[in-house]
Image (cartoon, rainbow, N blue to C red; front, top):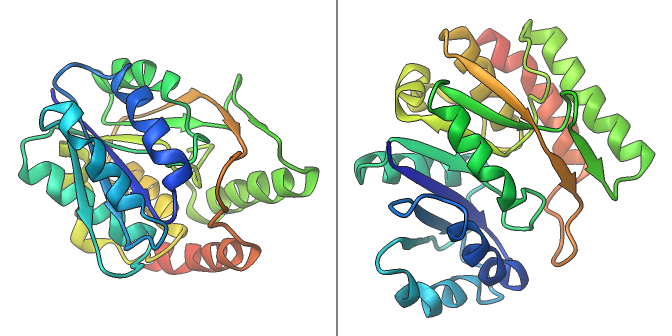
Length: 233
């Protein structure tokens, strides 16, 4: 199988050129990275293009003219990857909250599972640098979503995930209704409902050191409201 790591970006110039070499250092020699940049005014797209020549076609970028949201970025990336011969598609943040060191374990697990989740909420998983309140909201949100949806996945809201192409075909990307943060919940729920085998492996999730977080209380609360729409869909 051939792996593509998809990294959506918006104003991540401080992180992206440090992250890319660390990812390439731990993924298979035929694996690729796709950056999906939503017109970052800080020069993120240019920074990626400036180093493309170092990776002999393994580093690609899709530059979009406006900020179209996380769900749209990933679905666009998934479609690009499947059209270009990749069998496994990985979601990964640009801010080092998703540590590249976990990619080999995820890659190993996806050999025998349809979906692999880098999980903060299974035994051995953790977060770092979060306030008590932020941690409580995150864990409570996952628990709430699990209860509403009847889904056993412990980290429904997490964004560090590997998907076999076959799993994405079972889910049906055209059926995804989420536009924002609830995308992560909907994808995992639909994978579970479609009978995909799902493996959660523990990760440590540190808070970002550079750049500005895209998460807010309003975004999180909207995601929890969306859980009911996901259940009805």
